[in-house]
Amino acid sequence: MKAAVYTNYGRPEVIQIKNVEQPLPKDDEVLIKIFATAVNSGDWRLRKADPFAVRLFFGLTKPKINILGGVFSGQVQQVGKDVTLFKVGDDIFGKTNMRFGAYAEYLCFPEYETIALKPDNISYKDAAVIPFGGTTALYFIKKAKITYGQKVLVYGASGAVGTAAIQLAKYYGAQVTGVCGSSNVDLLKSLGVDKVIDYTKEDFTKKGVIYDVIFDTVNKTSLSNSLKVLSPGGLLILSAAGMSEMIKGFFISTFSNKKVLTGVISHTKEDIIFLKNLIELGNFKPVVDRTYSLEQIVGAHEYVEKGHKKGNVAVTI
Image 1: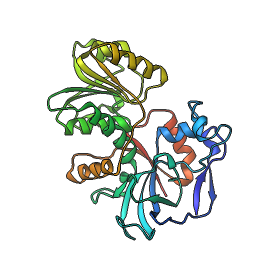
Image 2: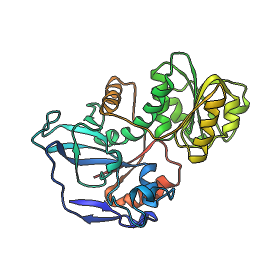
Image 3: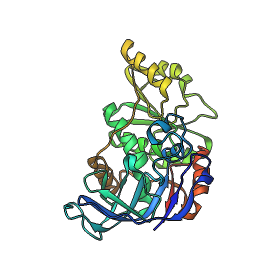
Image 4: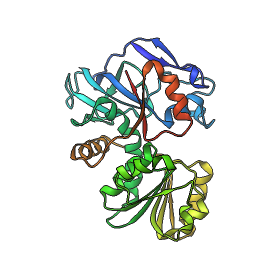
């Protein structure tokens, strides 16, 4: 089968299209023909080994995993003898967790992990981009226990996690303010935000508004300034926090009346099914900035690494 392979850490050019052996499903696995995947921050950071600590888990000098791609949509081609949840011909989508491997024509994946039937009302391309931002935002939104009428601010609101966080917070009844650049104001309005703040013109920490939840998806806000506009008992979510922010957040949560939430997310099959249901009900929609073919994967990595994408970047296979 055809796959995008990398055997060394480095620039996007380390990824090359090669023919590799097609996998065979184990007893509890399905063989999926991949129709679409996406390039997310996890992909380019692992390709580049950024931060360096990535190497401690994925290979010190060379990557142990040679095919990236953490999300996918496609169709079941074969099932293991113990599989009961899916059948040949089912259209599915999901997230590969730490297995990666979706930059390829075929992927084997256990039926019990983070996969579900694809929503009927969206394309394979749109389905593939949902799981990364969707599961990340859902994890933190559930932890925040957002309730009707709360004031929620999403910083970095035009990215994969940000566009998902807006829609999920609105679903739970929050009054949502999105912070983005000038070119993304209309996008946020189309997602249903109650207010948009253009960070190139205004500083949300100086507008005199107090928020119950501040969700920073890009780790670019001032921690101290954000806390000043957070209500007593409020929550600051740092989904892209580095180690220093995690340590500061721990002390803030321990010694103040405000909480900081960071850390590695977890997700389940039920989370993907929840997102599927929201999509089919019209309460959640994918945002795709650009679409590349698998042969253009280097260009897709170059674009995403610049950090200016709107929502998601899809890759068709």
